[in-house]
Length: 78
Image (cartoon, rainbow, N blue to C red; front, side, top):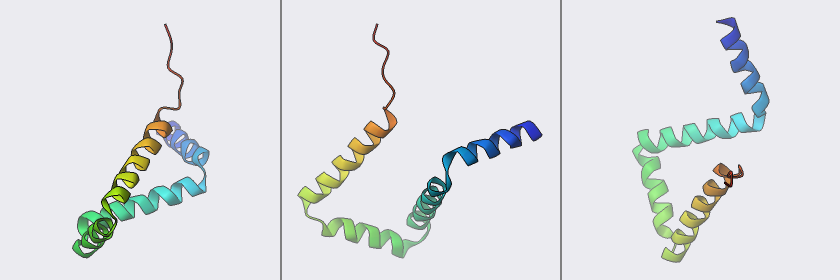
């Protein structure tokens, strides 16, 4: 059990403090979006206030960011 705990502590230490703060804020926002109807309505109202071209830009930018962030490993070429 101590070896597992040590590995977990080393993993946490390797990520840095800012990453933990951002991850915590993200979890709080997702929880609030699901559990607080007023926050859910606020997020949707804000998104709907953006023109359709802006909505497309937001979704495209988020998709491209996640694509490049998650695929930064070179593919093996055979």
